Length: 218
Image: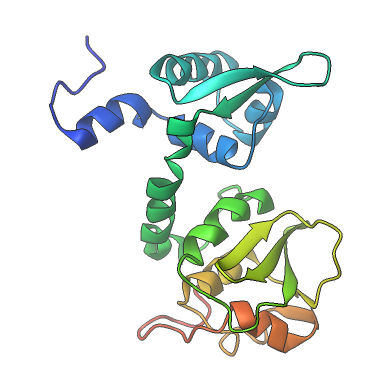
């Protein structure tokens, strides 16, 4: 049976390429940077080795993913093509759309702090910090990402060694709720820990909770 929808529709043809199970999560991993096969497998717990190989081959054939030789002994890494990297925008839109689904918390699902590298830029989209000179860390489940205020918005990255104005320590649902603007720091003051300048944290998480949202969506 054909795996195509057989419809001359942009959405249908896009789903022909990335609609199979795991495909967009592979893209998620590669939006954070090129990765070796083992790194992809480790970042996608639950995927069978042969299935990952099949999905990578399909995405490569479609022109979404390409193989590259690294400078470290010619090791093969996988990376998004220029066209594949354009999936960042629709994936960011899906992350924002998922906010009502995330409010109920993990409920036993796996969470990795590295996924904030994709989620937070999506949730901060269009937000320009008033103070462009601050940098804070966000620590979740033993991992940490760095927020840097810039003229164009909020840059989210792994810590680069710079001095941070503050570090926010919180559980993942709280961080995501704050970034989405459905929670405020005042709502969750008793549930988070701030080391350093609280005003620096408020530079990024200054939104007021949306009406009808319980403060501890949690």
